[in-house]
Length: 193
Image (cartoon, rainbow, N blue to C red; front, side, top):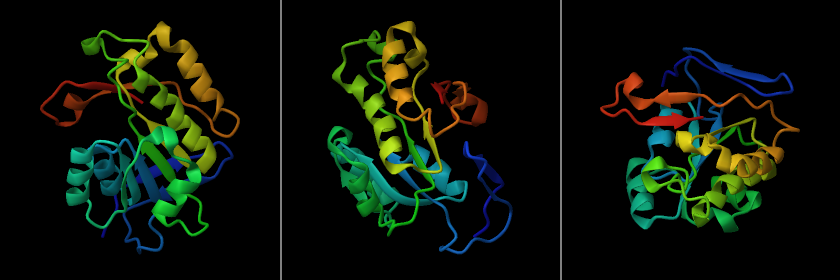
């Protein structure tokens, strides 16, 4: 298959690039999708030339649908709170190889203006656990997405505690907002990355 142009950089100067060339399955960089849902983020990663090594979600309907969309990917219906990086390595069958990327969109209900931005929503701590797993897995890169409400001042402590887990090993970009409508989707949903 042919991959689109992709460039990713890590803080220590290592840069992975893939141009419009054929890639063998051995050369395909591997990612894991946490909070995978039905597979939107996974699809984008696969279309960008990444191999989906594993997908995790707690919702049984989401896992079932993701399995239909990505039948060759290992899936787990697990709560991220109890997951360890080692569990994900085994599920993804990395065999000692370094994971290229960890992607995910932790549940947004507690941060969403539609749900009244509930600071005490138990799901909010899953944002922290995404970054905990980044620190345990040490992938070359990670991408976390959420609703713009995550940037509200009331979540500053949560963001700081989460980012503290990774700032020594990664160069963190400033958050930026994208609207799905700007990319051809029939919605104006904005997300922060």
